[in-house]
Length: 129
Length: 254
Length: 236
Image 1 (tube, rainbow over the protein chains, first blue to last red):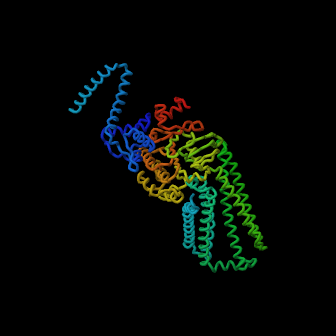
Image 2 (cartoon, rainbow over the protein chains, first blue to last red):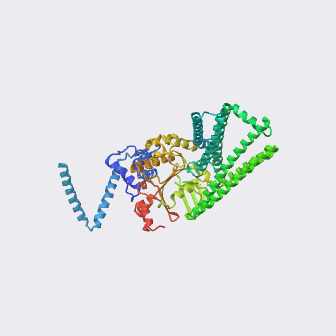
Image 3 (cartoon, chains in turn red, purple, blue):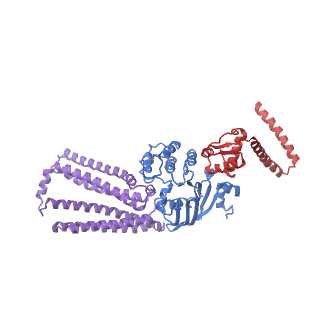
């Protein structure tokens, strides 16, 4: 995995793991690889992985079972909330950037709808090619 | 901390190989010389012993030089200086390793002498009988031989401690001197080195003279005192060397 | 957290030139630390002072012990095997290490040479720069030390070997050991560093956790490092 050197690594590790959960690569109840293995896989420091996992355990997304390892929570509610949160974060970024271009809320919605429609057409075309 | 045995083992491995190579080379040279004689004019009596004895000298010198190179190598290489032992242990083990290898070489030489001397027994007896001078009893002759051996070994140790002293002094002072005048300083240091070597040589000559004196007067006590004297100087040099290693001598950087 | 290294008022002069002056540096256990600085800034010198290969004034305590001779049993340094003749085989070098370092772990060494793809029947003189560096890394990491000092382990090394070396660092660094990696090229190792120590102007110019740099300045380690030379980031 390639890291952006400008963003704290523990934060990027968290995002990576969230992403794995959202795409279903890590399902509720799944066991995470050992800390050192994760560090090797991601080519990062063990301490940084520990920090990322520690924060995720505090958030309740991961559950640590002593002597067994770390597991993705079975609590569907928490996962749903996480997904909402991630979507909101992405939207927040888009919103702020568009806002910075002096677009009003209505304009943002219109452009977004327009974009999605265009994107849908383009993707359809690509599939039919 | 690493044990004395382990340090000794790693230091001696290469030195043993080097010494053995010198022995092989010596044997080869002796064999070639003898074969040459056989091919040209035939081996004359006493030649086995003579050739062996005359090649033995340069071989002794070669081993002495190779062992001192190995000695000095240790002091400036991280490979050895990073071994978890104190400087005293490192230094003494290093010296002992070279000394043991020198003994090994010496014993092989004695064996060679014995073999070749038995081949040329008649010839040697003839020469010995022909020597006119004070008649020695076996005991006296034995004492002289042992005395000479001890003196030789003490000289070897002193030689190594002196070489180390010179090397370590140069190495230590180099840290403190500006880069610019290093060449000039090195010249001065070399002059000091040469002076030291001359002094040691003079000392050796003096000892040989003493030996002559002993042979005529039989002053054993004086002779033993001289050996002790040499060893005391060696110990003093060794103490200075260890101090230099501890305080100033750095290794060659990565 | 305890300290694996505590340096106090360390000064080093060589050939009448001051290389390091009044250096204070404390490193905690269990960290990977990037020692950054230009060539000739004193990174190697700092490591050599810690091992006792160079002699300076001031105190250096490794694991609380300030006797220089005792450091050697706690510190594993990437020495360049100068004590061996070029015709020495790698397995002989390994035997040397096994004999003199009580903490040399043969099992670890076997794993490392497999992972780093080293042929131990080769002779030192026949190795490429990259291969030699891999051998040095394998020997250094095979010891179970408290402090590892890797001096420019990536210089002159192809990117595949570099990746393997980085992976082996993550894999084999004992959890409670601290590892100092010096380099003048940062980007490749930036993700594995807990902290960076920057050597500049005869001293420790900066010592910060790497994620703190990213959070505080919003820039990468490399950009931060470069900015110190351009005077872009105000330093406290």
